[in-house]
Length: 175
Image 1 (cartoon, rainbow, N blue to C red):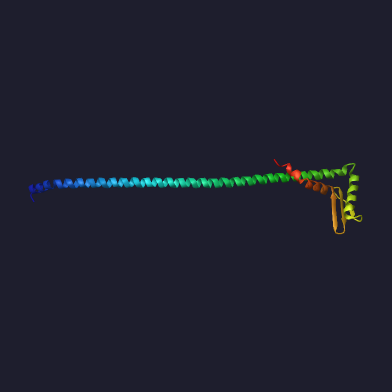
Image 2 (cartoon, helix red, strand yellow; image 1 turned 180 degrees about the horizontal axis):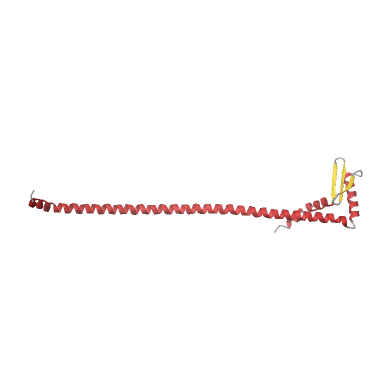
């Protein structure tokens, strides 16, 4: 092919080439626009999914936080209750010790001989005239009869008095 023929063929094909280029550009722009739309849709979907995941995570975190807070509150209440009961028990034991100490102190008073006599008489009423009555180390008496025993020691009497007053003693701790 000669140069002139080549030029003629090339010139004749120029409109075809230009049409093909326009069509290729149009197709490329359409593909690009479609790809941008798909990317925007995927991005929108991903953002919506991310928001949903974050919302669920937030709800779950709040639920977990509420459960944790509830557990901590229960533990704190139990601990407080335990401390209150321990303090009450210690106060009651201190009251028992104080009452027993004051009851034992009666041995050193002028009226102890008459109190001891009355306790011995009471023991014999409870166990019979043949009961064996002896002095208790803390003051008061202990009496024995076959198969039976009565403790009228001063500390036992103080303990029984506190036991009878338990409701009144308990009211000391009520708000």
